[in-house]
Image (tube, rainbow over all chains, first blue to last red; front, side, top):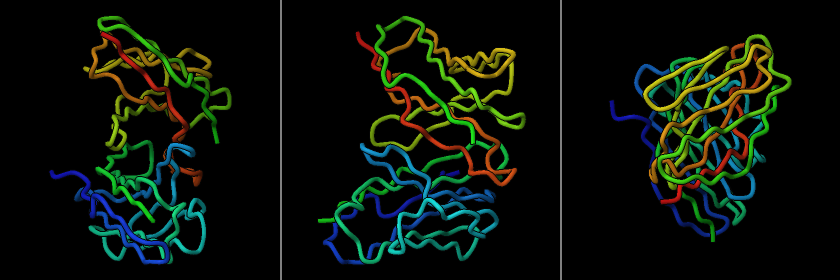
Length: 114
Length: 113
């Protein structure tokens, strides 16, 4: 298996622009997680899905952030408009189910908003 | 939601055994204890998971006392490549409706030659 795939690996954009991050979970996994990591705040859970349904988005920092999972093999995290404080590494992870299951992380997308 | 406390950083020489202890006084009956490892510029990677007593795999051992209020990750004979951040997580993965495993700040292990 190729593991969790994220694209792009690096993104540099200007403040105010829309940013879309993409994730392909491991085939057969039913749960998908989006995280953000910064030096100051560490690894934060933004939102997670189970069977393509958003379960908890309380970690999404504000309305500028949105996430979708239109099918079992694809998810997006969108930031519109982007701000410099959104600069971080965004990780996607998947697991076979929610209960005590190992989360497999992708390589992350390093986002820099100028 | 069980909160964990672990040292911010640790140093060790190559070849030594490293023990990282995590406190989780409010662990619930359904909660498991899971440890992840993160190298620079990579996502976290599962190391080991346990519920009670001792669990061992090819990478590490996990010791959990009877009261389950703490756990210790043991890395035998560390090498320079074990330099990473180690996270202790406690939870049931979201099964009960609680937030899935929450990552804290972790313990930054530096292995010195």
